Image (tube, rainbow, N blue to C red; front, side, top):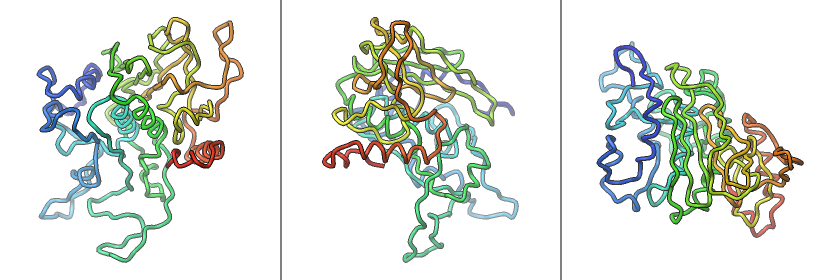
Length: 340
């Protein structure tokens, strides 16, 4: 929030995400903790095509000096109102979406997929104002943002389809949500209030950790990679792919290829503690018992014969290649399970 002309560091409030979904909650000071529907009946989402651009709606009486608002905005600490996240928030939006998919709140979750805009009335690429006959231009998706908020160069990309659903890690987290279901509630919650890092287990089947990261506009947050060594998971010894950084869709376990397509895998020891793993700023780690790599765990604690395709900053073309390769590896009957 912007207070008195300066931005307040609220890293300590990052842990409030743990309270979302505990409805109603007397110890949660946000309106979202008092929704009009039961926790197990709600549809959770960050934005939709209407509310995502509400702040960009021009005044009824336009003036020549009116300009679209900046991405960062002020809120009252109780209800988000029109100051809600959208793709323009970059990695912050990505992190919030992935957490939404990991945290078992609501009965269903909706993922956004939209196109870029500058003004409230901007329509889809290739569609003229008020046209009912035009067909959208060929869909070429932008890559995953690398900053929070997005840069001017990202906004200037000629490819106006943002395709948030294809951002790195989103589809991997959709698979995690589906695999975890409702029978593995969060436990072993941990947080570092100083830098804004959280972790939790999902029953005995998954471990999730995330870092608030850094905002290039407010200059708040941290830019350090966080070491996960010695953090406790519920998982058996093994080397796990990070579903929160997978480049494309992740198939059901019976069709899993033991191939990590984004980011470094996480090594878990005999005692369930992480021996090797870290979180990047604005990043997330999500490992599940059914998604291990084809590597072996050496006697010296290092991975041997590690199978991976690319690093965590791979472009959209690498994601397309990962999707195609994974589809080709599946029998025809299972390919419908891998969607974009």
